Image 1 (tube, rainbow, N blue to C red):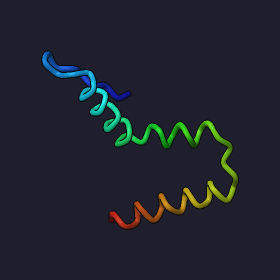
Image 2: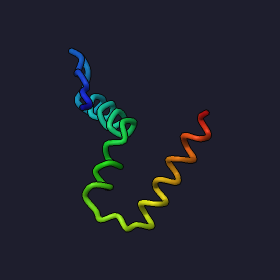
Image 3: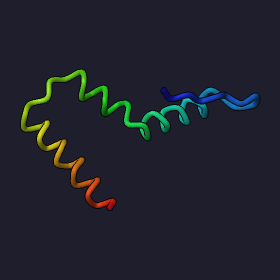
Image 4: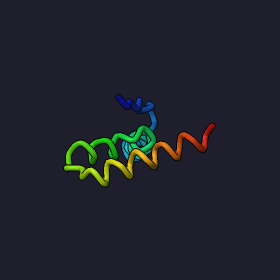
Length: 59
């Protein structure tokens, strides 16, 4: 779960910007899209291949 604490003199806009950045870093939006919409077998295969290639490159 992503949390952002707002400082005393911090505006709500900057806190919201930080929150959006943290959510995108955590990959929450991508996970939501994947869960909400039907994923065809081809899309699932491609997603797994991209993940596999990404982890292979890091080694």
